Amino acid sequence: YMRGTDLLAFALLTLAAGPAFAQTSSTGIKLDGDKPIQIESDRLEVREQESKAIFTGNVTVVQGPTLLKAGVMTVFYVKGAGDNANSTGSQQIDRLEVSNKVYIKSENQVATGDEGTFDVKSSTFTLKGKEVVLTDGGNVAQGCSLTVNTTTGRSQLDSCGSGSGGRVKVQLAPANQGN
Image (cartoon, rainbow, N blue to C red; front, side):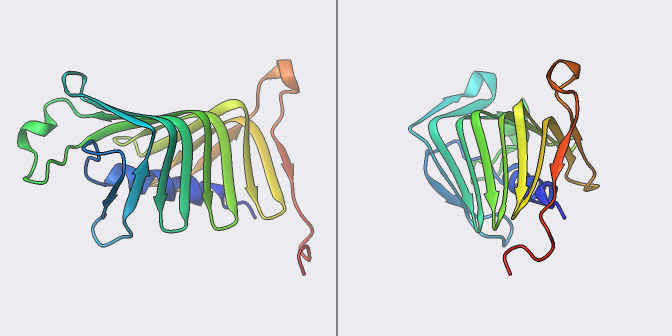
């Protein structure tokens, strides 16, 4: 049974629900009693006029058992939300974009792709690439676009189109594998 959608929903919902993390490139922000999130990157650029923060180079995001890696992560804030921010400097996040070899792992579940977007307002995460791969133990699903609604739990894996086979591929491991 593929639970890759649970992994993606958890990883990005927790990031989007938290306060802004545009002060340093390594932080331990807590999310309303959940485990802390640690973000590390080679570089952090904050563009206040554009309401965004850009983490670049070996971006790593860790929360509990969940790990997200990418070459670039851009956090877009709702314009004007910082005017009413509380004393901790948090702002409302509009969306997150990750790119350059996206890797998400939680427990034994892994999702990979070339780029991803999490839209906070619609609670929708989209992972795209030449090949989007979801694995859960011995189970593997492949396509080119994965869309997950983190509120409803509905997910959709789309094929790469007619030019490259045009089909979603799923490989299910035997039930007794690993025993």
